[in-house]
Image (cartoon, rainbow, N blue to C red; front, side):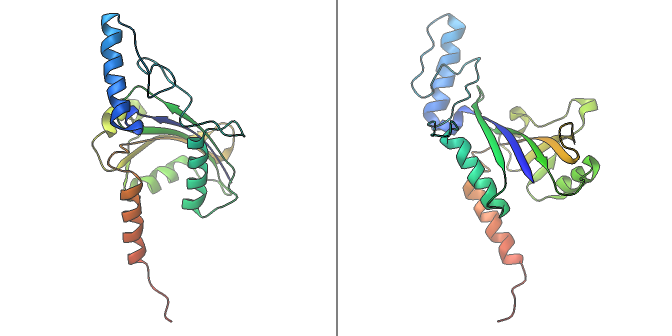
Length: 193
């Protein structure tokens, strides 16, 4: 019924110039030199910036609206209420998302974990007793997306879930997802003409 998310996007989302600015900025900071920013709106080292792309008339950024539009398109729900805040974080690669969903029917967290563990392209990374959950350090350089911290939403109760996702967008970006969707579509039975 609804989705609320915050994305935590690595410097690599701005390409090699973004990664270089983070690397150079960390070095400058460590030596006490001025940290320069040309790619990002503010210095990124040891900072988070809730601003990716340009602000729109509705006060969301273009990146936040792209996430909203893409979510609706992927889920084939053009009117799905989606709210997104996109934040640039000082990591080199692997974007993360904190996601809250409200569903039509109750979805117990254990059932959701089972579904996510079986989902192609997902790795259930969810054992908080051992401090195991999705992180850029563990998701970087891997094709599959880590998903964890699956729990019942305190806001939406039995019809709500909160979870955290992390994936290396340099490997698991739009191009790979398009190929996987096409491959899946080829596996679908075709209706007789």
